[in-house]
Length: 433
Image (cartoon, rainbow, N blue to C red; front, side):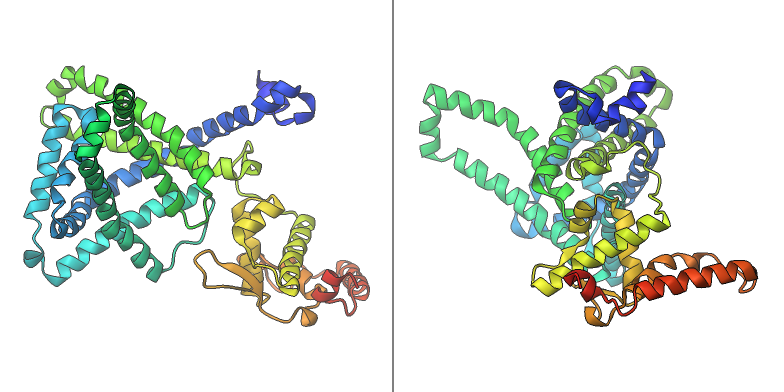
C-alpha cells in the first residue's frame, strides 16, 4: 500500500484505462490528507475564529446601518438564526446577544475615531481572510491599500443589500396571484416545493462560489470555484447535521462548563465553518492547477539550470507577445504555460522586475511587459540576472572565495559564454536570428 501511494499512484504509464481516470482523484485525496496533516489549514481557521470574534459585531453593525436605511434590517436575525441553527436553542440565545450588541453600537456615541476603528476592524477581518486564501492559492502579493478599501467596502456595504433585495423580490414574486395560481397545478407545486427545500443549499453554494472567486488576489475560474463550493457546501450541511446532534446530546458538557458551554459551542462551530471554507478553497486550487497536485508542498527550489531555462522561456513569451501585439501575459497564464508552482513563477517575475527587465501593469489582474526595448537587452545580461537573483540574501566576504585556480577557470567559462552570446539580444532570441 505504501509503495502504491508513494510511487505507482504517480505513474500514469503503469495504470490501466480505468485506474488512469481514478488516479487524479486519489492523488487529490492523498495531497489533501497531507495538507491537513501539515496543520496550516487548521491554524489559519483558528486564527480566523479569533478575528471573527473581534470583528463580528462591527461587521454586522456596518451592514445593519446600510440595511436599516433601506428598511430590510429585520432580515439579519433570520440569517443569523439559519447560520447558528446547528447550535439549537443556544443558537437563538447567541443571536439575541449579538443583535443586542449591534443595537447598542451607535455612531453618535462612538465619534469619528470610533467609526474609523469600526471600519478598520471590519477591513482587517477581510484582509485576514484574503491572507488565508492567498496562502491556499500560493499567491504572495496582496491587494494594494486603495484596492482593499474599494473591494472590501463594496462587498461589505453592497453585498448585503443585493442578497436581501434578491430574497425580498423572491418572496414578493412567490406571493403574487399568478404564481399562486400556478402552484395549484400538482406537478408545478411539487416542483416548487422541492426547489424550496434545496434553496438553502443552493444559496450556500452560491455564497461559497462568490467567496472563492472574489477573495483570493488572483483570477479564479468559475468552474473551479463551483467545484470547491459544491464539495464544501456538502461538508457544511453534513457537519451542521452532525454538530446539531452533538449539541443536542451534550448535557454533560453543559453541566461541566455551565454558562461557558454556549461560548464553547459557538467557537467550535465558527472553527468548523472556516475550516470547511478553506478546505473548499484548496479543492478549487487543485482543480484549476492540477499540475500542482504533488506529494510535498515544500517551497519549490530551482536548480541553476532550470532557473535559467525557465527565465528565458518566460522572457521569450512576454517578448513574443509584445512583438506580435497579443495580450500581455499574466502571472496565472504563465503558471499554466510553464507548469511551475505559482510562488516559483512569482519569484522569477519579481527578480526580473527588480532588475529593470519587466514592468507590471496597473490592471486588476496585472500583466507583464518589457521595461526596455528587447533590441537592447543582451541575453548575457538576462543570464547574469537569473544567476544572481538570490545573492543578496547571503552576505559573503568579498575575498572569502578567492582562489586563483578557481578564478581562472570561472573566467574562462565566463569568456566562452560571452563569446557564444556576443551581440545576441532578447529580440534575436525571439526572431531566431
